[in-house]
Image (cartoon, rainbow, N blue to C red; front, side, top):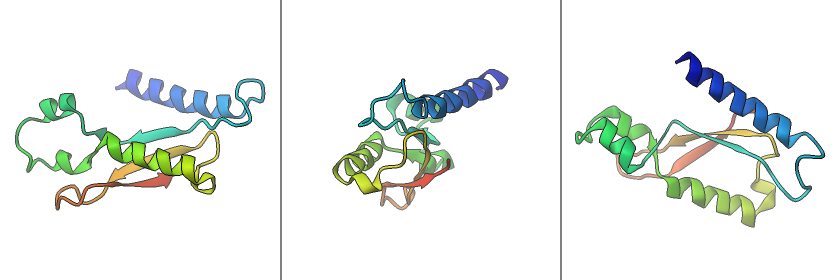
Length: 107
């Protein structure tokens, strides 16, 4: 877990440094870190197993939910996080079947 934590911290630091270095990014570009707890992918479902009553299924976020939010950021620039931001993605009501995700600015 030390390697995982170190790599994650380094990625966050790189994103924030890159976003604030004038020569590294164009003025019309935004660099944002998306931080889902777990993506709903076939490989993650295979890792958890067939039992959908497992509480981890409730934490999975569909990639389509993230894509939809990014689309909203593109269409409505005032909703877009500032370059260098880290955005936590949390599944909403997956157990009850409502789906979707909520997005929270972390940094």
